[in-house]
Image (cartoon, rainbow, N blue to C red; front, side):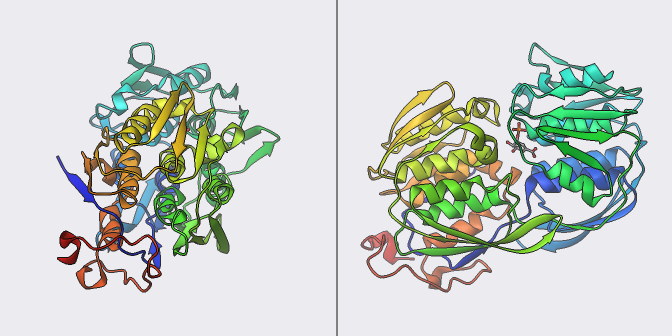
Length: 464
Ligand code: S3P
């Protein structure tokens, strides 16, 4: 079992470039695999989750060329040559690993294929509800069979002969919206999804990028069947959900500053900026290029943070950032309330229970609610042994908490980090060592102002 040991940070790197956006990387690989021809994807996130998607498209007949490697991260440029919307029946089961996005979006694509495919996954994925995609896909005419009432993986999807539907999402889920829209490409007529709360719109933006026409009318997104994506090269921006860890690492340190470079600034994902602003940090973003998806730099200047309430329509926008925002809440003065977030209970682990448990281990008072939690912030965090529960975002959120804790924080079971952020641990090292100890490629050019958040050096520290 891999572990990460973290002590109080010694310095703040001036800038970090985070790897590619996970949601966009999955979708780019899927549309490229459905297009007839070659698409080059740059800035791709070579995390285990996204590689599962690429392997799935390969198993369904696409040709993959891995083109360029970024040291410490993996292959960030690849070409996918698809052979059109009629995919090849795979010769074996498709392993979706830990990835809910792979499973749910692929279910939408497979609903349009006239053959049966089995999707399998790891222990965590096999507990996650797939009924939320099985239900609308069955209404369209596909057969989605799974385990138990929640229709968990292994799933068997038998597709073909779909009919268009109008579907009102029972929960705010971009994955379910995307599964229905992808299936809609195979159904004659107009397929519509009504979303009561806005969710991330990467599928819609990528449809435009790949030449597929769609419409939004109020809370309804529609697509006409019979359209095929045109192969079109794409550059994926950095993932704001990965940037969020470093944003919070710095937000509560008065006088500190960090720049996160080339981050996706799609406004269905930037809620974390608003929350940190409400807590008192100074956060600015500058949109630099907009090639389908807006992108730019985010500058965070630290401050004494204050508690806030996070709930309502912003929840889908910050759903993946709630574990790290709970850490920000622990660093802030006052009681922060997170509500309307019961979806957190069906992520890679029950993230409400996991966050509450680990914050308590670090000395924080937390009241767990069915749809969120109350966090009493402001007490000095204490180093502790943390359980990731096999969930990448829990592991990373508590590594950041450890940078602000007294003593040593040990995070257990950290292999899971590679599902979304290869290279996270190397970046973390920039906070932990003085310059002379640095081995990672990004130079650290600024140090904390003297006396700001830097504890007296212990004998162990002096040895660095
Ligand atoms: C995702 C949507 C969200 C998010 C997940 C990625 C996507 O899930 O939590 O990490 O790429 O569409 P839900 O659709 O279940 O809310």
